[in-house]
Image 1 (cartoon, rainbow, N blue to C red):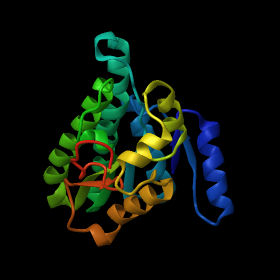
Image 2: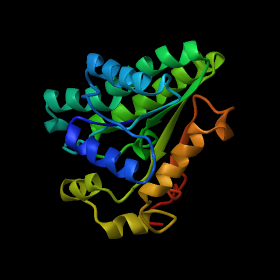
Image 3: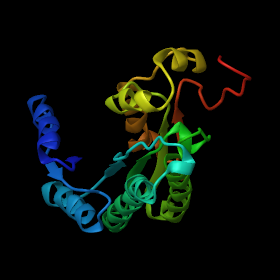
Length: 224
């Protein structure tokens, strides 16, 4: 099931998957709103009779000097990145616990592990997401419901292109700072998510997995 606030965006992805031979449906929903999250999960259950994997992937960046950060921007970032993920986890668990199990994957960030100037709201939301994951991953493990957090590093996406315009960094900066010497690929994050969703990760819950080319592990004085 593919979700976006705009149905046409979700439908474009779902249609492509169907052409590739997969079963896919598109559902529009704003995941910062509980009623819409519940409708999203209900649509999956109506389509397939159960819910085995939930990926909480919706998110927004927020790069602005902290002294200038407006309350509305703070709340919007927290509502989408953290509250939205909690609502998704809760709605999924209400299906997964009675059915005997499932896997919930929260998409965090390496900024859940470190701090970076001008990212007060974003870092707070992602640090909170790791804490939420730990609580739910331990609370629901006895029910067979695993909750984990996947933290991507710098991945070349449309969001990254936008962030570079306000975030004081370039491609060359990321290449120098990352031990792997490059941006990550969307496919590399996807494969990590598939692992966490699979039975290969059956004994992993409440944990975090950094997919970052060594970014968080590196504690040097300057560029790698």
